[in-house]
Length: 238
Image (cartoon, rainbow, N blue to C red; front, side, top):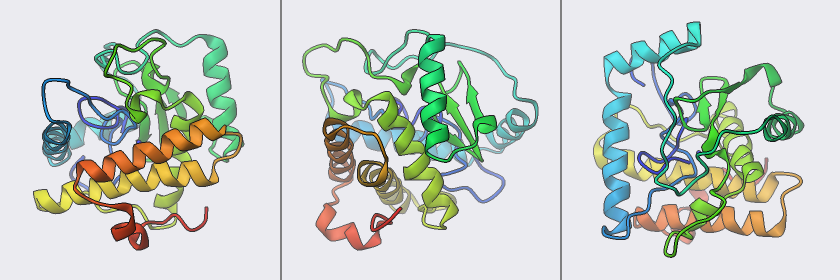
């Protein structure tokens, strides 16, 4: 699922938590990039930060409040320029909702929010500006994650995360040691991108290739290889 600081942007603690009911922002397609720091170190830092947030009781209470009330402090997200930060137009919102519905996701569970990154939480799909790639990127920022399109992002969340969760194939991300958490996080995100690339309708060949490259990068950052973990992934059928 795309946020530069914690690896999903709109993607808890208390109840048993896995990749599906994470708050938006812990699994998104937006993996971070820092030209002055080894990317794998940045990823590990982000994962540790996400794990700490998930296991915070206060954060869990906040999520429950968000789920029930649907309100909270609004702030524009920052993606360090790696994803779009410009407010979505009505036309863009309509197309994103329409594609989500065509994928079989209930329209009433789609929420546009300003203070969380794009991603799944509980049975809701939260969408923010970072659902789209930035219109222009600086030299050295053209990672697969930064180039994932709006449709591909939606497919990653719905076909990749939501449907895997419903099938009982999401990777556990709660109450784990750091090493297991990091491994499961990478597997869950890679699985989502591969599923989207393979099974999402209406994507172009470029969008599918970008998703596959995103998956490979996520595994590589966790010192994993596709050939070694493919049997663990729910990627054989939709």
